[in-house]
Length: 253
Image 1 (spheres, helix red, strand yellow):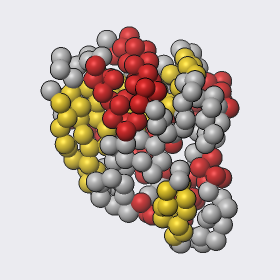
Image 2 (image 1 turned 90 degrees about the horizontal axis):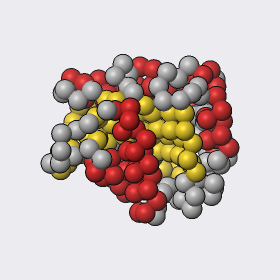
Image 3 (image 1 turned 90 degrees about the vertical axis):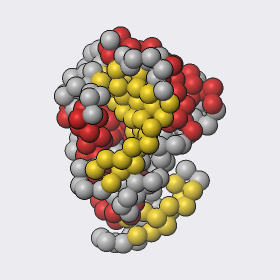
């Protein structure tokens, strides 16, 4: 049936822009994809993942976090916690539309957010991380040299994944204030699929090892051999999407 532009109100009152990708057949279930840090819903890896899920009969909502893409808000005022809240709000909105979300999938920091949101989505049946940090503070540490003089309420221009972005102090403070993720992983109550590349030079595969180590069974781990962090190779994104669809199909049905 194609893609439908939608909008909904986030957890903190911000209007968020999204796209619902509807399969040609009756959906076997619904998924929400959380994009990577500073990316957007139309980033090529996200759209290819959605297309692969659609091919397996899984409907998808992909949306822009506040301050990115076509969503309202300022990225300099965004925080990881607010993104997690908005991810939960996206699932609640989908449920209100008669599309209960059974699968959360997140790329990079979006996967870390999916892990954080998992316990708050009653309809959830499975969660997937792709190239995700095991703890949100990893991103703050990666930016430490560039935001050293940001101050409590400041803004600094930083290079993120080769792009210049304005980073706000609230984001850095919130990333560093997150609770111990090992305990959160131990309490995960849905099946987990971890996807990560051994060649990832941005988020080392040790992060995937840690996520997998502390999460309870059932869990699965697939090495995306040959992939870079942003999954710029279309064949890699298609492969990842097919893996997710095959794995998640059992739980969604």
